[in-house]
Amino acid sequence: MSSKIHKDLLHFPAASQDRQIDAMMHELMDLSPDAIFFKDGDGRWLWVNGAGVQLFGLEGISYYGLSDQELAHLLGPDSCFTRHHMQSCSGTDEKAWQAGAPWRGEECVLVNGELTRHFDVIKTPLFGPDGARRGLLGIRRDISEQMQAYSKIHYLANYDSLTGLPNRTLFQEQFAQVLATAKAQEQLLAMLFLDLDRFKDINEAHGHGFGDTLLQSVTKRIKGCIRASDMLARLGGDEFALIQVNPSHVDDAERLAQRLIQAFSRPFNIHGHEIHSTVSIGITRYPFDGQDVQQLLQNADIAMYRAKREGRNQSRIYTADMSTQTQARVALEKNLRRALAKREFLLHYQPQVDLQTGQIVGMEALLRWQRPGFGIVPPAEFIPVAEESGLIIPIGEWVLREACTQNKLWQDAGLPSLRMAVNISARQFGLNGRFMTEMVDQVLKESGLMPEYLELELTESLVMANPEQTAHILHRLKDRGISISVDDFGTGYSSLSYLKRFPIDKLKIDRSFVRDITHDDADAAIVNAVISLGHSLNLQVIAEGVETTEQLEYLRQEGCDGIQGYLFSRPMPAIALTQMLRKVRPFEINSSK
Ligand SMILES: Nc1nc2c(ncn2[C@@H]2O[C@@H]3COP(=O)(O)O[C@H]4[C@@H](O)[C@H](n5cnc6c(=O)[nH]c(N)nc65)O[C@@H]4COP(=O)(O)O[C@H]3[C@H]2O)c(=O)[nH]1
Image (cartoon, rainbow, N blue to C red; front, top):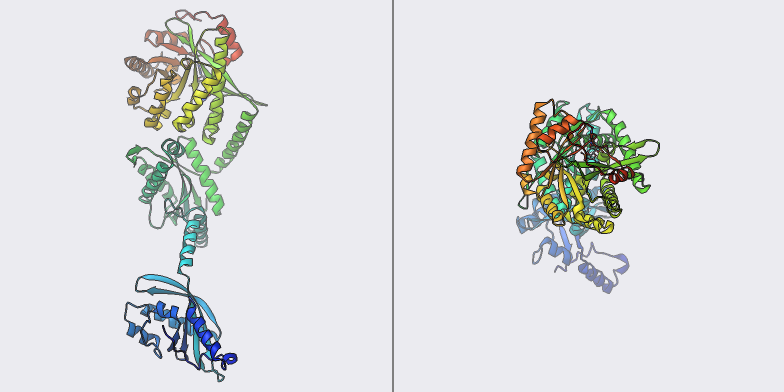
């Protein structure tokens, strides 16, 4: 440890007579965890305290009277007295001299040639009465840990730790900067808003760890489609944003969107599972679709929603009329929420008739909204919004409870025991299987309905969205004695392999094929094919939307098992169906109605 103090410089007037105080000052400086040092007016080292000796690697070195350069030479390239350090150190010495007053700032030092350390440095120049430089007093505090903590905080505040991408905060800052440049230089700018399709379902089905890995893979895949100049960020959840800086053509963003959609067509391999994940993209372009960050972001979000509503796995460029429609959608969502609370929903029931016996063998529960001032609103007008907003989950639970309770009431009243079919939406099914089966169990228990009098109607697209999970849940439901039917058959996926893998009881031929069955050969061929396919797999086949006796006759001859349609009955309120069931008389299959 160094002990030589240059007496002229360490001259404390009040204590000069008191050697004890001098010694105490000396001791105190030596004890300080900060490095303290003195140099003379020419920048030659005079004294360094213990912490400084350690920091600078001066143990056993006679540094007294040496300049920075001489010390650097003496200590060699592995010391902290590297050229870089010397430059920085001498530079800040000079700043203090120039200021003529204490100077405070930061120095960044490579210690032992590897670790970058940050110092908070105070340098005080000392001048003689004649104004000549007499010495320099320096204190250097190691703030590396604080700096590390600061950069961690900065990272956490600005980056998404899962994907390493800028988060919404940083993205908005970066976006504002590039937008300002685009404005100043009259350049184009495009922003793409990406939202994964059905990510919530995947997350809920496979767990959050799985969802996180998918998001990381998605990030890699997006990065593979973009240029170094494009700016990608994760805005949160399954939302990503992408800025195309100064695209050469106004259509570039759309082309990029197509590349991204194409890249998502390959399945992702997550923990050994093949996952099909698609993406919906909304696009805005400066200066056409907004003038500031918020407007461009919001409009891209609106366009993305449009892409979702029109079938997902596609992109849409923002247009002004989308905003008006979005406002209407938001208002509808608000009203749906209220409708649930105010019990404005009701069910109509449509009978299903056996084509051999003419007997009613079941019925389908169909949701209606008795909206004050609007009359009865059909489901097509509000179910898509209920699905998008997630409201279909409580609404669907209400439908199931109401339908089961009503069916049990009919049975208790001595009316024929029939199977009640209830539509299940993808959102309900996408929830983790336990919730779905527990919900069904709970409703059956509360209503007292036996499971064999319940049928769940799923669409083909729902079944195929996540085949593994769907198969698992269907088996659990089937084990309870519940029937499963596939609605709108023929309109969705062409993959028929699921028919064998899933415990399905019934296929429902979509009414779009039934409509022209008697005069369109293609439709007739599809219907025939579905009937024979169903029968070869031991499934019941029922046709929807039967309106004429010709359609009925055709279906009967082709061996279809059942029908549902206006020819026999429109969907009706419970009270009307009660009356119909009371007078139950077989429907005359062979005669015109
Ligand atoms: N033109 C014509 N139409 C007929 C005929 N027979 C029945 N329909 C109509 O065809 C639809 C059959 O229901 P879906 O295919 O399950 O199609 C349903 C179903 O996908 C959905 N939906 C209805 N209720 C619910 C529900 O509670 N939950 C869910 N998730 N979806 C529901 O809304 C769709 C439309 O329901 P609705 O408007 O009630 O329309 C019903 C019914 O009124 C006919 O002979 N001719």
